[in-house]
Image 1 (cartoon, rainbow, N blue to C red):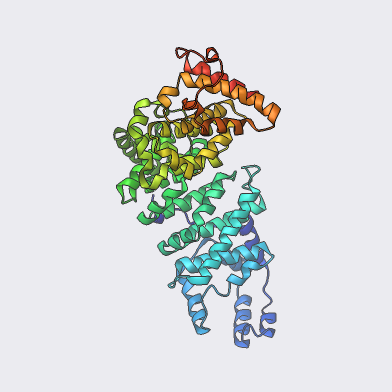
Image 2: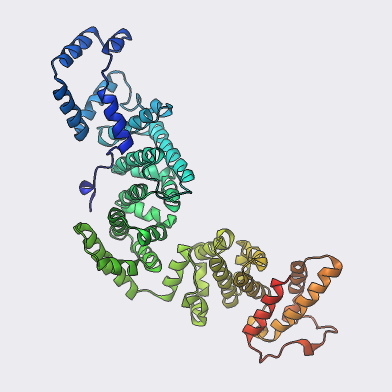
Length: 504
């Protein structure tokens, strides 16, 4: 699918089309325009004579034809008129965006989009910034309203927002406007709308805008930072509308086909594989479509993703999963071989992956993501001890410690293990023997908190900082028979601590 073959994005919504027909049916009082000196006497006389010569049937046919046809050449009339007054063609319509009447506002917005997209001059500077900011405000207001039902496509407010989205679709057909939209942080606005519940029509329009942006190789590079693939794959999974499926597949194809950098293409492909797009494509391939573009896009994507799977390394898989923000207990997380060979690679590109990992610990509210992230921090420092300082500088140490009191048992469990790995000097020595000592000190710490009014976390940190867990200090008078045998299973000891923590 290409831009020329796409449906005109500026088609008015039902409520606006109905209102426009109502307005056209009214007779214009040209005499008032004459009295207001908005038209000349000669113009007024000509218009009145013209109207008198037309029958009602001819007028109705004219209105019908005018509504169904759009002549891009008419735009030049506005530019010629504006040039006489040393103005821009859209300067007459931008102030109308502040009106109270929604119909007037959105009709003005459509006119501005058509003038900017079809005119011989590009909108620039403050005018373009003002218009794009207005679009973002309207879409953001929809984002706030759409936290309810996703089936609100028929409401008045949603139809007006669809008109705004249509204006954006029209603007983004022009390459220069794509860059301006991205520079104004417009992609964040689009992703915000898609991440919330909204009707399928608005979904389609927002993804259409992403598809348009992805025609530019530079834009494909820039879009990497917005985690687009997981959001679109979720919508694809739930989509029941063929038009939504078609535009998602077209957007995916552009991301892979228009990107000139091999690394960028590979990153998008890995993200699609990670988000189970390959499985979705296989299911879609079994269906029949009237639109040949869908079948062609499915075949293209299957071929490209199939090639990427062949070249997929375990580190690529891990990197893709981490960047998607959707951590799960995939085999790489528990693979000793993976961490032994790749822990140091988390330092690449100025600690890019470590920063993502610590960010997930900070912002995610998914217990599985938090548990896996805490586990990975522990494995990183276990296999790359010098990384402890890096984790601390990134705030990861404190974030992991905070999750020791999380309501979810798995999060507490993995945070606890990660903290121990961050504190000890030699995990391999302490793994079996010293974990039992850790239980003992945590019990003593609990007793201490009850009598000396300090937190269990403070006591635990005190023990760690004085390296009790590493046996650099003697055990004092504690009974060593209380320490579990080194032959006991690690999981049993760990679960004991988790059970203890759940009661504190």
